Image (cartoon, rainbow, N blue to C red; front, top):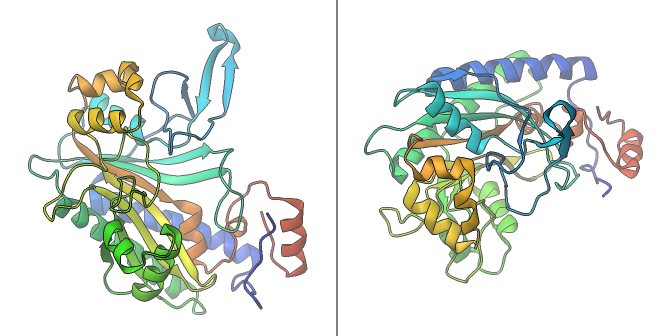
Length: 344
């Protein structure tokens, strides 16, 4: 799993400058995201009870970290993989009104994730969730929220460039929306990841719509759990999916870089449909799912925005370990050391 860094790569910022810049990026982006989407900061759990259905199952195959709690009769807990479902429950329990929402500074462990230049088993992201108003459960509203987040990304990039002259802004004026079916039509012989690379290189910043739903060739663009994003509802143009990913072109690695996964969340109808499609109908008996099916949760839109990914992109880093403390293969550590790249 050794990482091959870009030829001739040298970090723009020193280690000390990098630490200072990480704080600049995180503080500025967090404040502006909160203001743009009217989100209040809340404290979130690091672990949740096993078997509650609250933990994020991601693609449905990843193993969460589990541990028993002595003073609870060895009841097992799971370290969160993300807070996709917990946030929606919190919005209901805290009584948030339509048009407002929450965000949290989420830390998680995903031991089954890849370990490479852009992946780590440690996940740090802003998890956010917004209560929707009547009439907003459509792709038009999804795009509106994506554009708001993109404006925050552009403002953050500008502020970084003001502090560090060596870092020049590269984000285009607007983000381009492309459905995964359109990506398949344009590049039928490429894998989904290769399609993202070509499209990100062409446009600079894209939002791929429809992650998780079956495409015309029988494949899917990417995996999604059946119980948070709605990837089966038909939109105004006849294509399916009310979710997607924000992806940019990384000028350092010369490759695409996903910064956020987000979408309009399932309602009772789409939850039942997606549980059936994935043969996971037994989940309907879990605590979280029962509450949703009983109508106890508001209709929401939400997602996660990778903190380390943002720092990588804005600070022009080649490896996520330059902005995040985690574990790396010995081969990777040796290779980076030889090239003068410090991994935290």
